[in-house]
Length: 392
Image (tube, rainbow, N blue to C red; front, side):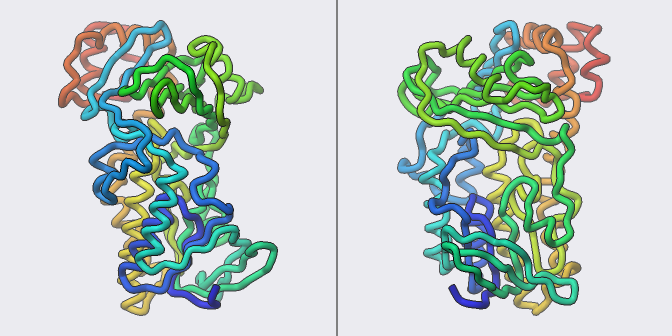
């Protein structure tokens, strides 16, 4: 590594790689670092992504697509199924990726654009001069190093340490974080072209269980639960209970655990010499926890804004705040709306979910908004108004 760059990106997930790629395409000298020795591994993601959203950033490649799905099925606690078309299912339905290959492909694109990529390289601190970030300290393969930069991009995930070191509060309330567990399973009976979601407090209090196909009789089976619902029972045990009920003969190939922000976007995404992208900025969807497309969007915006600021020779907090503004224009309205929805639906009882599911059987979901659906449910079941009023 050199001792100085225009931009240092910490974290080679989708957001970090898009930031590095975009900055390099803007003729900046970019370093992209990843603390693990293999980009994309371990996978901490259900790997679902919408087709149209993905194609805004990259052409789909069969090498990193495990399955193509065209619908989502939602199961209420009593087993009532509601099926949504791909169009209505949102950003988690379209493709199920192979993130180990996908993330490496994005990092490769950043490298081909001109970014320098270094693995087994960890940031251990920030260099701050006159109140502004101007580089990092780190460790690479056991050796300490220092690298200066005009701008540092924090793409280091939920509760970003880089952000905290720069004075940005990235901590999460327990009600705004999903703790997750996932098994890669084989030899299970699944719908190969559908992403399935199970709403049931028995298996995922304050969250849901997902089954995302990854090939013939193979799927990511995972669960997310609100940390505020933790009662001493580990997410993996909840998931094992679900597996015992739904896929008792299935075989577990891999296990991963992690956390996802469901808080809505951070109030502050930048400061002098630093910006936060992806989960570090809490731009994942508050309802589903999905964050691939939003991370890539924030990364691309970051690369473009940083290039303009460096061209103007001004990377102050005021100048970089245009990044906050552009991300809010792109993602803010959707995230704010979904956070309000999440605050309501995570408190809804299993019985209410069952009644709502019964009411929606046979409804044509094409071009139907959440408020219209809720009005349909409440019209048929007026006693549910008190629980669902926040969604109207």
